[in-house]
Amino acid sequence: MLTTGSASKRSQHNQQHNNLDASMLSHREGTPMGELTPHEEILYLRRQLAKLNRRVLNIEINNEQRTQREKIVYCLGLAYFVLKTIFWLNRN
Image (tube, rainbow, N blue to C red; front, side, top):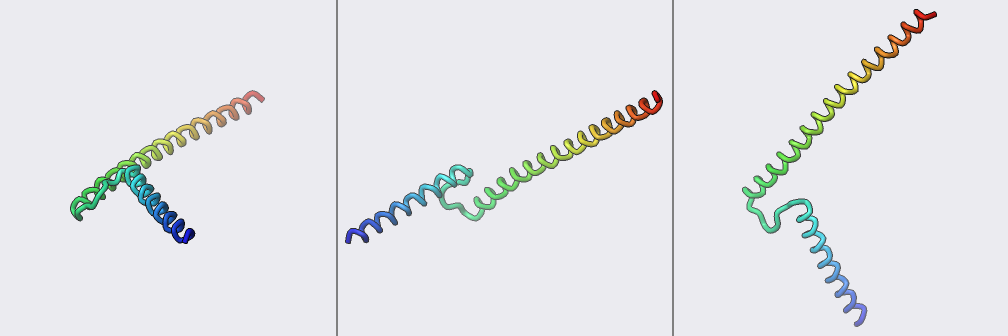
């Protein structure tokens, strides 16, 4: 009798803990609580998609800028070493 009573208490505790975790996760992720109508759900998903699109666009822009900077630095470095080599060859 003691084992079934403690087992049911444990299962209730685990269920309450899982419910608490789920509610904390939904608050943390910014999901609205409660039941949503299909229209509200579509609007919510569109907002989330717009946020993701802005993030991806920002990452792509930053990546493109980084690529441009790398090209410029590479060209400057190459020009520096070519000039150093020419000056070294002319000196000798």
